[in-house]
Length: 491
RNA sequence: CGGGGUGUAGCGUAGUCCGGUUAGCGCGCCUGCUUUGGGAGCAGGAGGUCGCAAGUUCGAAUCUUGCCACCCCGACCA
Image (cartoon, chains in turn purple, orange):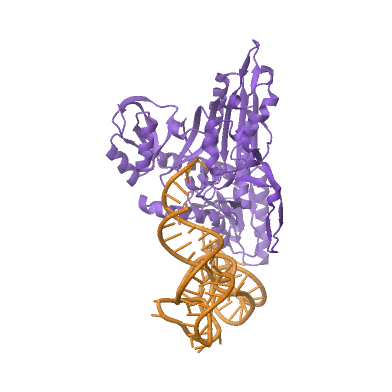
């Protein structure tokens, strides 16, 4: 993506959509704002789920499932929460259809109107806290550490595949604690889980931080987030972890008897990541040849393409290919042997390149003679011929190398696209000509942030957790500031 | 909801201003032969209510009116 910013912005959407479609990840559906996740795209999501789910379990959480429908009245209980989601809810008002009296198709049966409308969950805090009320009486019932894998619906006006669809898949953790301290620790623990996942699985460096009040989750006391930088210089919120204080406990009247015998409100957290991460993966690593997947999340880590001219050669080559696949399988490497006779090697090379398969092995008659293989890596597009002896070790090491290289590349990109701005002119100039993260002083007020957003579309992505305190003046107002915060235009 | 745009084969499109043979092309698909170490070549073939409806006309993809759908930009948002 070596293009100037203007060209990048213009072409980026097109480039992104092409990768999504050509790689077979997803396509737009007949339902407005929704998408069909195709098998290959879903396989990536399953890899993400597996890795995340293990980390959730390792930190003491269990999976559960709560209803898709939420009674409308639940939403009015937490004022900020309803304010935040009211504008983007899908609402079920009826439960029956009937034939149109005029004989043309099917219409809603007005007699089948629900007494209370049901909201299709945009997030599950309300129904979960309504349930937790019945589960919690004593401090002995705490903590509750639950996660659910689910779909949610937010009626977005403008959608983009994976990044913002009306329906999306995610996980949402909802925990209940006896003390504020414990809840804050949980919030931070899960933020670290997300950051670890982004770094070690997605090969994407992220900034950990807290949101400004303007950007905070509706109903939260504090929102922690991980922010990633995409190749077009825009920021992407990749995950959030919320400290909800006692807001939902108070709204849903969830109290527990403490060891001292007092009735106290429960402390809460919630945290989530979504299929948006697939969008992040695409935008962080892909190139003009297509998708580039980090080995740890690639559904197919190695593809073997046999090359032959006739039946005799096919038999020789395929035997070797099967042997190699067997070796790699034994080492836990997800390997596909593409022995289809209906496509030519060149076609296959291109297909797996577009799909971002980290390593391709080609085996032909020449290789049989010389006991070699052709190894091609997706991240650098380099091809080398290597000995077929010990191929399993070669591949294991190469996969690790690719994983690390992708991370380092993304990190370098972020570093060279993180810029300090000390004046308003600099701030504007960087936004318009370079993009990326801008480290700038801010006077800490919501009004200033709002003005900056209106003037430039840039928002505060986060206030980094490991921030250095540094005296300065706000880029917009000139008022005193104690630290730089991260600004960017965002998805 | 504002502003702009587009609907022609599975996908992408030409033709529309200025009505006139059988609606053309590329990709894909099917058959055959030759091919196979970077998206194969040649030959043959299948596939169309030109978004829907009404109107004008000898004649409509093309003009008129109404409707529908989708896309882009903005407002909203992860």
